[in-house]
Image (cartoon, rainbow, N blue to C red):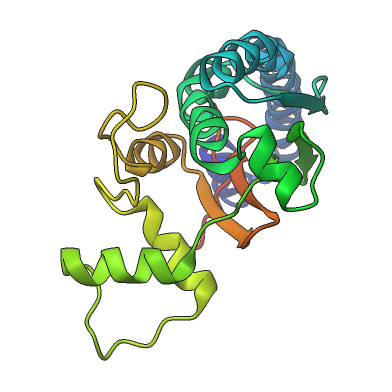
Length: 238
């Protein structure tokens, strides 16, 4: 862009050299764009590289908890930047542990609620414009917004007179060290809240939000940039 700007200035000052110079700059720009696209393509890997470690993790966790959980994977061929691949594994492990430990109920409890004994965990990835969207959905007990609100009041995170919708209350689970679990287990939080997931998302310039239907399940949506190698900018001169 800088080269292009200089070429235009020189072309204005020396019209005889201008057209050739501008043509040379256009060729350099074309080659650099091609080079950038090629390198970007080399950096992109299927998210399968992250997802393939989870079936065994879910199997082991379910057995440990005496639960029955089926993991369904979708969009494994979605390609993302290697830097995202390297960073996203741990947050997803944390969310999956939470889903199996706190979300999905024991077989007897599920049957009593009229659900299949086996719980389902759906992990999917899809590209949307210049972002990759990863969703983790469980058909467990959901998040109790009232319990989250009570805990947030106890911790002084919200004021008693503060009005919060259930959706906004559920987002409080991402507050540092926040947990509604009565006992700390080795499986999910280990005393650490979902804020560790938020920290990872911030490093990746991503966003995370939760949606829940009590008794029916919870959905976590992670939005991430496809690549961390470039940022598109618009230069403005006044």
